[in-house]
Length: 338
Ligand code: E4P
Ligand code: PEP
Image (cartoon, rainbow, N blue to C red; front, side):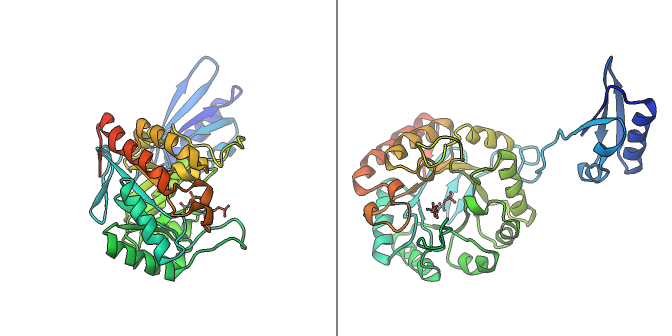
């Protein structure tokens, strides 16, 4: 942490900062420039924050120089991590495709979507049983019945399942069916939910909130890690911007930025980003090219009849193109399709 003193700060003001920091067990190094004095602090940032240094006379600004997350940072763990979900690796060296219906609607629809997912190169199945909907009148999902369908389709296809959990009280129940728990964009800062999945003993897919900075996203991951669970995969799914042509704006630079700050794998959701079927293929290409560790793609046997997000779901007729991309592009980036 660095304390920048105001131009008119007196020697007594500087001394008061130094004294307070030292009394909290820290060290303070004063550096006097021509027009400014700055005080560099060494010690526990949490202790310094409690001192409320910004309110002292003569203090212009207090700047935090270290990131507010530790366990998920590359300072803590320099090598990039590989997370395994039901034997499927997600991380550097591979590209993992996770695909399936946005919402589980019936056993037939889910099995057919899993078949499409597999032919598109997926090694994991996605599907929502508890849907976080903007409107309470929109389809909310089949609940536990949907989880049973996902477990049956897993037994039939061998594809490990990732599904969303939307409240802390149902984490154990959802975890008893799922191979991986998804935290959706709307719940990225639901701290009680993050702590609950951190204790659930299952890998977690953490989607970025639509208005979350990368630092807030990684701090959310830290809540999960703090509970002893470092099996976390980050998912960039587009953020809100002024643009209305797309549902969200895929923040492609978030992939390398998050990978540099954190050892956790980062995947991309080209379906929720663009919100349009015609954009899934170009955004998939972009995601692989930028170095994403995987993809999360919506597929549906009959998108026109989908109960949720049909506009962004790939249909059978789109599968050939996506299959060709995931078969050829990863090797250009030094990755193998899992
Ligand atoms: C699906 O995955 C989400 O529940 C969906 O995108 C929510 O969007 P909406 O409820 O705003 O349509
Ligand atoms: C989803 O993937 O099912 C979903 C709800 O997406 P998001 O949380 O990114 O909107």
